[in-house]
Image (cartoon, rainbow, N blue to C red; front, side, top):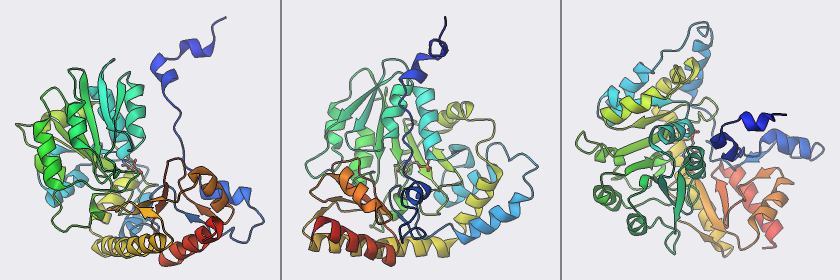
Length: 367
Ligand SMILES: Cc1ncc(COP(=O)(O)O)c(C=O)c1O
């Protein structure tokens, strides 16, 4: 008898199942009778804990009644607006259903069987999964002692089989950003047979005013760079699914062949367009994250713990305990943290939420 599994492509069978983060409903169901039931701090997926950009909400509400019509295929209006904001032309941008889909499309277009994909050892999990999905070999490059990405070690790890390098800047889960010149210099040194993907999902949260994005490295002469971004973080649109890739015209032409006929849905496109105009919400998010990042870091340092210097909307802290077990205990108080690393990752919330996290951490850790 032929089993269903025999009919499935090998790369699908070998692909790890997507790890979905714990949701508020999971915790509500587990603790139906607890007094925090309606006051859950969901701090495990680096979402915007201030909410959704109000301008995006209004645009999505207004667009809902137009959903009998298909969305505009490539998100032209959004591409135009992004090009006005960040430079290059609308044809250098490709809209996707979030940065996750962008990573997958890049994998599909570039990774052939046996290609090596270089990934800093502590970085976003989707890179390795994508490499495996397309039969590439993820090669993990050790981090520096301070958990920064070791760009020299990445350069040293390049072989004739290397096809892609993923650099997440600032990096998830460490929260640390690279020095701009260091990154641009690294990109210049990468040989021609290798594509560099710079994931800038958190770039707006970088502390330095003079931060340079890897977009500066994109030219028609050097078409070896792709930059990924998302509306999930600063604009609070993680549930709407919209992100984009920026690269040379030639690369975007190839990537676009593998995007679904509709780049994303009509609500997400309308919301993203409006979010770009929502300076007020962007500023509120950035100033809150900056302030609360300092608050959380200082409180944890006072308790004697090391916190990686964060340039994102989350912190990565060494609580000197089994992180997974700690997170399970925190869930009993309605606080969801990310625990499947050596350190614990905590999304930055409002002052009220952050105070509650600190208070409960003190209780659980006996501080
Ligand atoms: C570094 C990084 N890249 C990509 C993503 C995926 O973002 P999106 O919600 O746009 O799929 C995330 C989400 O947390 C992320 O941390």
